[in-house]
Image (cartoon, rainbow, N blue to C red; front, side, top):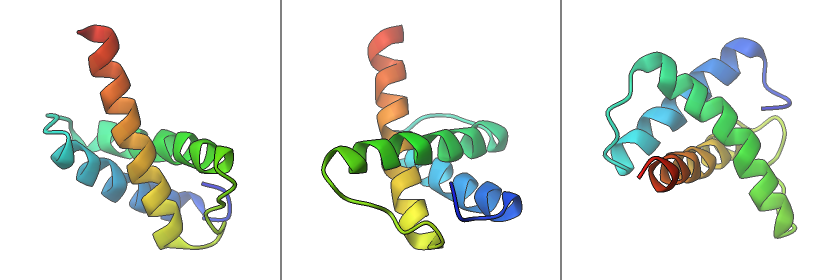
Length: 83
C-alpha cells in the first residue's frame, strides 16, 4: 500500500480483509484480516496494473478497493489449492 503510512495501511488492510472474509464467508481473525488486506492490496494493484489501471497511491478508498479485490483473490486461491 504505497503512499499510505503504516497505521493507515493497517486500518485500510483490516477493513478490506474483513469485507473480503465476509464476502467469501471465510472465518478469519483480525490479524489475518489485516494481512489479507495488505497483501491483497499488493496483489490487487498488480492485477489492476495488468489492465492498465492504477489505484491512486495516496487514496484510502482506491487502496481499499485494490486490497478488497486482492484479498478475495487470495482467499479464492487458498481454497482452490487447499481444496
